[in-house]
Length: 291
Length: 291
Image 1 (cartoon, one colour):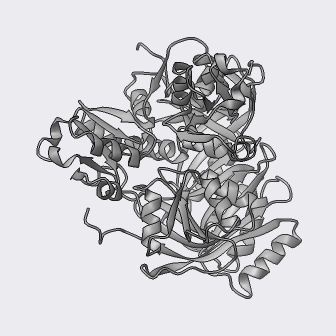
Image 2 (cartoon, helix red, strand yellow):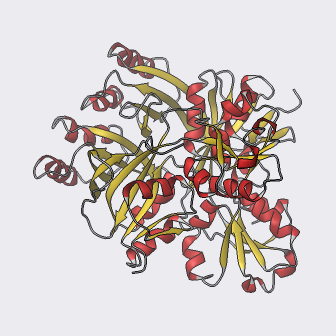
C-alpha cells in the first residue's frame, strides 16, 4: 500500500483542507472522482477515503451518499466540518494594483457564493468559469502578465504562491462543508490534531410503504427515548420516483440499549435500517492558518 | 423586458432541457450564476427564472435554496422533474471508429456519474474535467482532428452537432433533477406542453429551540390530519452550527383548512413558518426526443 489516505483532488481544494486537518504526513493521494476514491478503499489500495458529504464546492452530497449506499461495506468512521471561506487572490506582482484586474477566474459555485462582493465591489470585472478553484489559482500563478485574479481558498493561495488581497468574500459566513472519513471496517478514527466535538450515528431507514405519518412513527421511536436527531433528510430511492428512504443523524454514539432497541422496533414495524457509521466529529475552523 | 425567462446557462445543460420542457418560444436568457438569475426576476428584468433545486449537474441544491430563503419575495410557482441521462458523443467524423478515442471530456460530476461505464467499458481512456458538459461538447465539435469524446446530454449533442455513440451510460437509472420556476408573486404556472402530475406546497419551518422531539411534534401536526409529506430535510441555519430549520414538501395544494390550521398551530407553538410556494409539478421524461 503506497498511500494510506485518498481524497477528492486536485490539490488546493476544500477536501484537501479537510484531509490535512485530520491527518499528518504525506501519504495522501488525490483521486479524480468520488467513486474512484471509494473503490480504492474497497480494494484496499488505500486505508481511508476523505470525501465531501455535504455542501462542498467540488463534490455533491448526492454522489458520496449514492455510492456509499451502494457500497454498504464502507463505513463512516469520522467526520470533519470545515467552514467555507473564499478569498480573492492575485499574482504577487499585482498586490498593489489588484483593483485594476479585469477578470476573475473560479469554479462556478464559488463565483455564485461571492455574488454580493462581485456585484457591489467588483461590478466592472468579468468572471470566467473554470473546472475548480484550484485550477483558477494555478492559471493566475502562470499568468503574471495578465490582469487576472482568482477566487479560491487559502490553501490554493499557498499552493500556487498567490497573494490574498481580499479575505472572506463569500456571502454567507456560516456556510460549512462536511467531510467524512470512510474505511472498510466499522471503527472510530480520532485525529491527533483536532478535538472531538461530539459523536454521531448515521442511519439509513427505508419505510415499508409510503403512507401519511410513516415518518412520524419512525421519529416517535427516537423522540420518546429523548434521543436527539441532528439531521434528517428524505431521499428518493434509485428504484423510481415516489419511493423514499431517510437518512438520520443521531447526536450520540451507538449505545448498548437505546439505539439498538429503537432499531429493533423499527425493523419489527417493517422498516429496513442500516447503520452507515457511529463516529466522532471534529470542527476545523482554520483560524490558526495564516490567511 | 427583452427576455421573459431566465435560466442557469450555458446552452446544452440540464437546466436548458427543463426550460424548453416548460416554455415554448425563444425569449430565454442564460445567466452565469444562480443568484444573478434570481436578482433579474426580483428587478423585473425577466418574469420567470428556471433553476436547479436538487441533484443537478450544474447547480447545487444549496445555492438555489440559500438565495431563495434570503430573497423571500420570490415564490416557487412550478416544478419540473427531469431524469438525468448521460450519453457518450463524438464528432460525426468519428462515428465508426469511436472506440479508438483516447480521452473523454466532461464536467467532474458527470464523469463520476458514469463511473461504472468508464471503468468497465473504457478502462484505457483518460478523462479530462472541464467546467460544464456543454463546454465538453463544444470542445469536441471544434476538434474533429482529435480522438476525443464528451459525456453530456442529448441537447448538447444537438446543439453542437455531435453523434451519440453510447446512450444512457450513467450508473443510476432513476437519478432525477428537480427544477423550479421562480416568480416575483405567488401564483401557479402551467405548462402548455406537459401534463400536471400533482401539486406540492413547500414550507420552511424554524423550530423555537433545539430539543429532542421538536421535529416529531412538528410532524404530528401533519400526521394526524393525514397530510402526506413527500420530502423533509433539515438544514443548518446560516447563523451558526447547531441551529436547524426544516424544509417540508406537502403532497397537495394549499387548501383553506388543513394546511393553514397546521401552520397556525405550529406558529402558536413558537415555530416560524414560511410558505415558499404552492404549485403544480410536471415530469419530463424526454422520451419523445430523438436521442
